[in-house]
Length: 137
Ligand SMILES: [Zn+2]
Image (cartoon, rainbow, N blue to C red; front, side):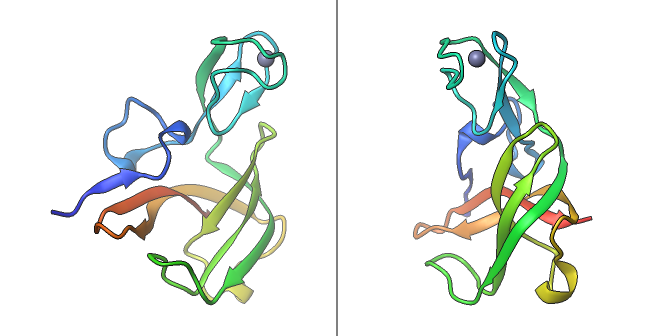
């Protein structure tokens, strides 16, 4: 039977069961007003423990760097593109990019991008691993 699994539970909402419906969730420190992604229990800024609350991250950001890969590790389907995205709350994410072929025509520095949930790879047991990707807006 085909299974679906999140790539990392510390990136998403614990209240949403279906991986394809997930949203990006970071940790917001109630003591120093700093937000982190992935989620943390201890604030790296003020070092306070258990003062974090889950906070949904922005769905759109800006593509600040990218490249394409024509070879990939097992479970990936090259060619694919990936890059760094800045979110308005000051978080910088590394992400695969999707809906962007041909890459050289559709991808531009500083372009707006939007988060989507998608299959990242299939592991050796046949489990589909889901995570976030960004697509051009
Ligand atoms: Zn803090």
